[in-house]
Image 1 (cartoon, rainbow, N blue to C red):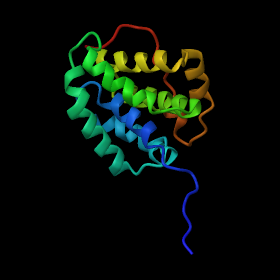
Image 2: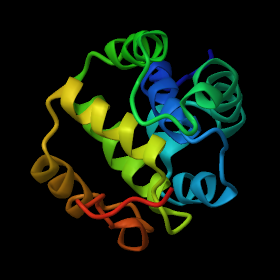
Image 3: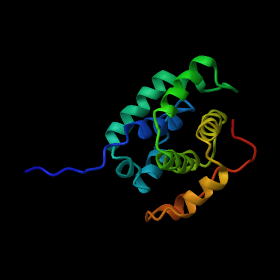
Image 4: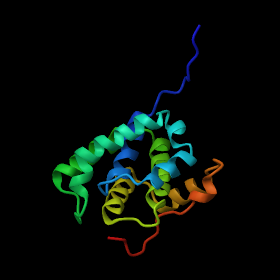
Length: 158
């Protein structure tokens, strides 16, 4: 008899997170390390190697097109919206936003394109900054304290 985790992998959530990581046209190793420390891959039910493949796919599909743009072009927005809309569970959406906040701040700066996609996800999913802050504060993974910086309104790195 084989046993398996009864929770289905949240591939759609992992793909949406991968798109946010890839938004600036690259995946910084510190972003992936932050996700590792927060057990993002376990929480999403997707192995790290699979997540890295999703990031690579997003880099080829969306990331390079977003880098340097000050708005989402129609083609890019359609792709981003498709990935976001595939995440239907409100708790999964909040988890993705929480994990994205940690990943996007892990390298010490938030680029314009990262902020653009992140803010678009918050708006599309109706996730407020207060909800995000609460998700960060109530994250009880061992490394949560090291990755507890919400994205605040301030000048962006270019």
